[in-house]
Image (tube, rainbow, N blue to C red):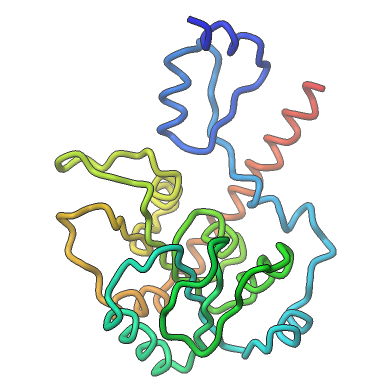
Length: 232
């Protein structure tokens, strides 16, 4: 098979999740290792970042703000209104942070829309007190900076009672023990999560567990880079 032949040309095979690891391993006798997403190495590699003071001034960010960032309107208007109200009750400023497609029309105190410089986007998430939304990489930015998050996953799906691990989000959070911050929106048998539960998840976020996981993951990232450089 052509794929098996091509894989023989690689000195190092790395993937980001167990599902891809299992698939690639079927076509090669080489070791296929799971390594961190490069975003986990961002703070190590990029020292000259926008400060909290700079990003707060530029976008008029309060000291206590939570980001809502959705690419789809997953729930009813009433659901999002309840989420907004619950966050306000806890004293948060609620910011609607755009996805590349723009901002979904949901209740918020104000929007940060596209176009948005990538370094600004990173700093806005890094300095938030919470991220509630979709997609992997904004979640990893929050994760990497120990910002409480709740993620709605539209990549995962289920077959019967079996959770299929084709989602990198699911795979990462299961290994980190953070599935309490996760919701699979394609699981039609799962009870719809309530806004109060999402806010509680942000407030009860286990930062110590995340910090321990991040330290281990950063060591794995550095080891991965040493392996790559050693092969050049």
